[in-house]
Structures are given as structure tokens and as C-alpha cells.
Image (cartoon, rainbow, N blue to C red):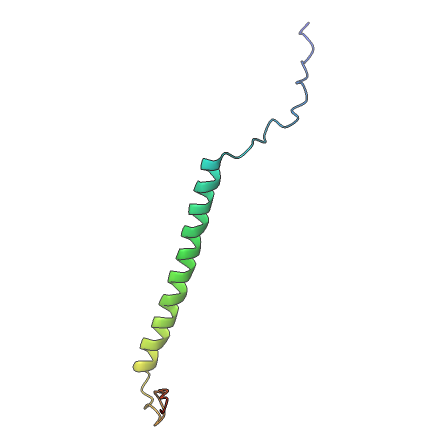
Length: 72
């Protein structure tokens, strides 16, 4: 006859560890990188819209460029 199965002791906290300052710094760099990627993609979308507006065939209106001047 085979031996009965051994039950493992409770694994309280086995999968949790305290984050070190290095782990926190690496996480912050990762988050900053992901945020930078999102900002870059948004900027490319704006540029693509501007380029599309240049070549859409519609003429520019007379007030296409708005400038602000301050009199003295």
C-alpha cells in the first residue's frame, strides 16, 4: 500500500514580498515609459490630422491663421 498524501503547510504570505526601493524605481521608470509612449502616439495622431488637412483639397478660409497682437 502507498503512503498517504502529505499536505503542505499553509502558504500564508508565500507569494507576497516587500518591494525594495529598486523595485519601486524600476516600476516608476516603466510607468514613465508607457506614459511617454501614449503621449508620442497622441502627438503623431495630431500631426497626421494636420497633414491630412493640408492635402484634403479644401481651400483655406480667410481666417485660417489666427494671431494675437497686443497694442501699446
